[in-house]
Image (tube, rainbow, N blue to C red; front, side, top):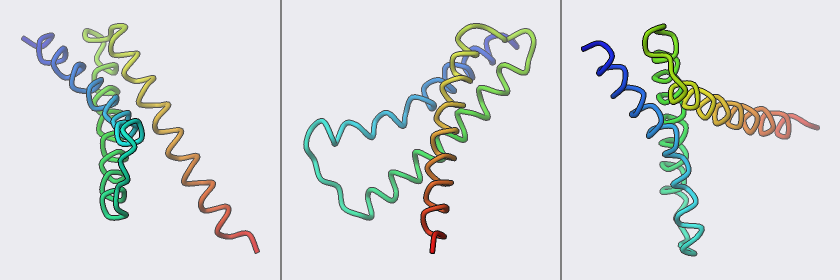
Length: 98
């Protein structure tokens, strides 16, 4: 029973971690989004990265549910999180240069 719960949780973590890739769909279809839609989309991407990271860490933290799928989900979420932190640091750095 416990293994099934973590298996569903790991699939959800990978699905949520891959969700930010949907940002490329409007670019591929040459669709221009308004500023409000882009802001909401950015917020959803940040939330999905954070939720995916937390879920994948929960799955990897449990010794019984640790598998290659969970580790790959953690790596994907970690890379997204590093990318977001780097963009944020760059934005802060650029805005405070005299």
